[in-house]
Length: 116
Length: 109
Image 1: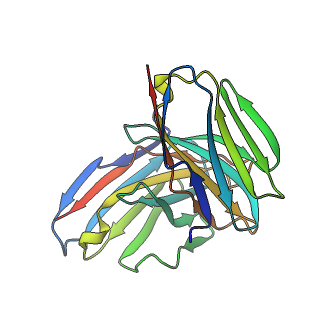
Image 2: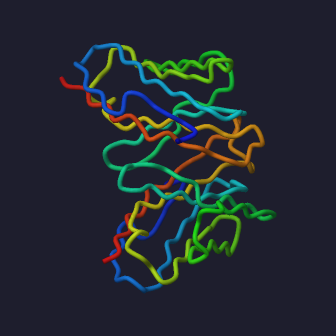
Image 3: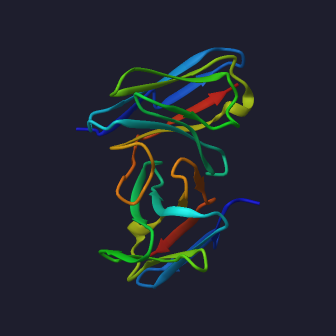
């Protein structure tokens, strides 16, 4: 059973479109995350979210919004896609909120977004 | 300047060699993490540590808090170790994460 799954695996779209990436975890974790990995393989956190608190990285444009219908899902919505949004997006989850020595993160397989 | 710096950026080794990847950071941290990203893209957490040393199989991670430095060692390297190794730190407040740019390791048979 896949612990953290993402769909789609690949997403190719035109500039200006609105798209969503779905993430689901079956680990019973309280916290989920979205990361962006650019073409140079540099990872950057976008959001941390549990049912009580959303922490947004202040550098993330407000075109990006996380939506959590329940504890097991955290979807990423992107409005008005731009060329610079092309990247691999990773979802992750952990037992509790905060990334500490006792709180391992489990990553999804990634979604490669290409904006044309 | 990035809060987390790794060296080397790229590393090629012969099978069986001892490998060291270095990570230096400039912020106060509560934990340091080593991640492995395979060529297929998947990311797994290798180690989380805040002091001393941890060992898992052929992998050893050390951290020196005073020097703000960590090393990841791979003993008896194997081609299946070929991957990108990423160092990341959790801020002292626990809610900021910073990543290194990764070290791309290729182990040649």
